[in-house]
Length: 310
Image 1 (cartoon, helix red, strand yellow):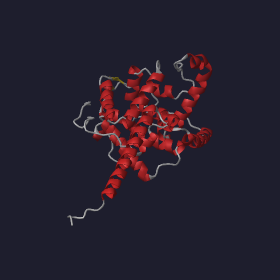
Image 2: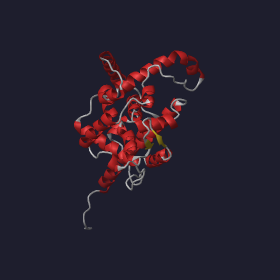
Image 3: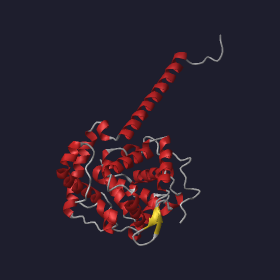
């Protein structure tokens, strides 16, 4: 399948504007907790899993890879003009990724159906994270708005418009068909959800020295959230177990997150790129309000026009 399309371009597309749903949630800690679920759904696609298995450094440098992925997502939403630059960078990065999957089928990372699936996974995971970790589930109107914003991100990334459904109503049949027909327990998906996964220690010495004790706690918690925040049909397609006891623990964890996270100061609640973009947006709104007040004061000071001199 061709990797290029006249509609697969980042030119002329803008990310969602300030004030939207993604602007509020994409850079917050709660969304960060949900990203591993989306990533696992991505690599459960045989083509994506094969590409990540062969080309990614997720085994040797998971912390660096995670940091780069977070930065990329933040630029899509909060980067302004940098969003298009990031979209072009990602397409260039994936242009040479190709090979044969575990079933002997050739793949290319930029094949429109494959590239679109990677992006599509974010939408159902955002909905599920909101249900468990957010203040309240999204309304139907908010779900529709969020999907529209997610489509805008897809255009910035250069995703072929024909590969992504144009509405929420079209999305769910597409999503269910992908889960039913394409997802499977790939090698990478199993690794990302293994509670005893081998993960190298993060950066500096103190965590490194304590890592033998911390690693089992980290990997079990990561697996718990990854599986729990994944839609049940995707979880079943990948062959992941989820018990009623785990469901109860996830709900209790969500209640704690809903209480604690809104109380955090913005510098702890939002990632740096999101935090700075939100600060600039607030400063811009204050400037606009001040300008409007000055204009009103100036009109009042000058008084009504008399039309002609006496």
